[in-house]
Length: 410
Ligand code: DGY
Image (cartoon, rainbow, N blue to C red; front, top):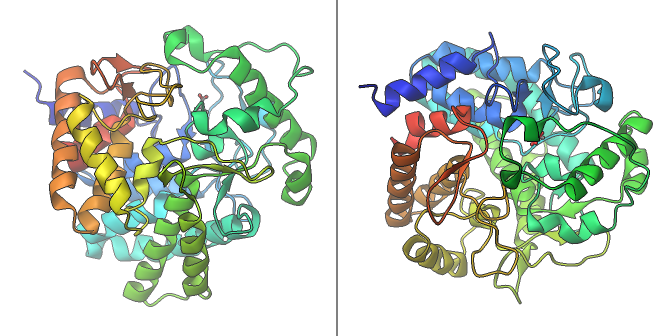
């Protein structure tokens, strides 16, 4: 008998490529930004030095302008598309050209709290890089309200969420050309984005690459710009954590107070009154997505209270067998297996749980934790899960699901 905790540690160790951890072999053979921050949290439960190394490796790929890429292609792997040659990243390590929700500062603070003695030096060394990334986001990703925008569905990390449907419809991908998808040769194509989606993902990569990821130019050239709860809530939370770390370690953090106020107003601006939930808003058209997603429930993680979201959460906790679904089952676009259009993601539950616990909603945080634990214990360390049946979907032996078990659920 192998206990779930032992299996979880084995998964992290098996996915360790020396200094960084891949999400799962085959489907995702490189270092992904937000996966890596979650991996660090898992490692911290049994090897705190390795946890810091994970974050240090991530920041070794930081671009000169402060951007931290969403994928670092440390070692070429033909099993993944689009690879380094398609992206044409301009950083110190071959990389993609977009970022991902900034979880690193928040996870680093948790790891620092677990062992302040082991962590203080590592944290000090990483802090300027984390602050530079924060400033890059402030400079290039805010809309007029101070909400944080995603410039590619992969940047928000919720690839095929209904949040992007109208912005995606505005992308002309007719000249994208021939390419060979690799994801559907590793996992069931019903669990993955469609070809319609992929054509647009690749088209956006081509647009960025064409101007060598010049952000100033992309402000006008990129048709896709959506103010989103994932980017907005995680950036706000990261800024709050950077401020706390700077106070704890006596580090310079000019401007963070003002940034937090701006990000807080921006995150609040994502409240859609008609939907009665936090929603995504197209930054070009101003149109709401009308999407209640699992990212909508990250408000507490960002330090924002919402009685309406709490009511919704209570209802989801009692009516959906395996919450939190990535898209509300009562809305017409719900698809229980297709990636971010319905399935439950354990790490998103953990982030929501951190927020709930931090804002005094211990009962809901605990209910969510127990349901997540039961889901993983019963169905394995899958990438994501069917919220109705609990069935595993996407890749297996997945790093962030293992890390969630070790740090929070198990
Ligand atoms: C993929 O390849 O599906 C990834 O989600 C991109 O980040």
